[in-house]
Length: 253
Image 1 (cartoon, helix red, strand yellow):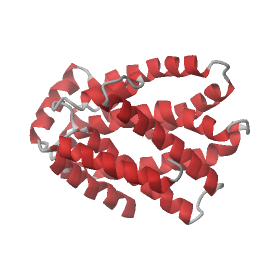
Image 2 (cartoon, one colour):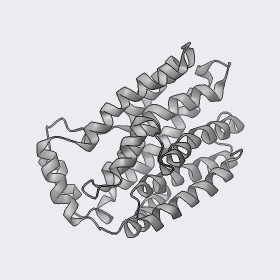
Image 3 (cartoon, one colour):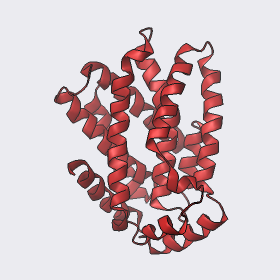
Image 4 (cartoon, helix red, strand yellow):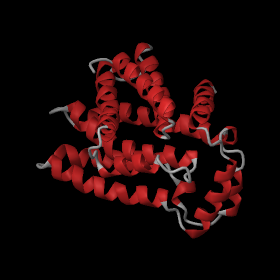
């Protein structure tokens, strides 16, 4: 892929494949496609410090999700943090929000730092920080919109918030801002290290631990997730359609 429009063509294909296959990976794909559309529109409106560079970053960034998805589809292993997200998508017991956060966890906490460093090449990594933060702002805006309207796809999810008050539950306290800050720190580490492959393996190992906390959020919250899950739609394609409405509404709002 050489342009952001080519990325969007592939994202449309992935969304269609997931809908046809009733694959819950489609939940993240719906969200991330909207992020990509928003960045494309921002580039056209010249919102970023360096718009051609932002397109390069977006292509590299999206490419890591797309390559991980393609690898998994042919029964090979992507990074473990993506593998955990993809394998969890086979299980109907997880909530829509869990599937979204598993994708965000792998994509922000691992992929974004790598993509930022690769975009800069030999140029100082600090030069891309503002545009790096803008990608995260777009994602955070959409995720906040989804959480605010989650009742459209998960009617009683709101019950979890007061019932889990005061508990250190990653599922409820997952922070895009903290993920962004960690991703930026890792971008600098990856940019400056001698063995980048070893760096990715180590980072992936740590991010996989976070994925496991999202998949297994503790006894109390796991019980509540089971109750909330009964009220979520069982049709993946129907949920994807409604989630698409939610993310587009979130961008307009």
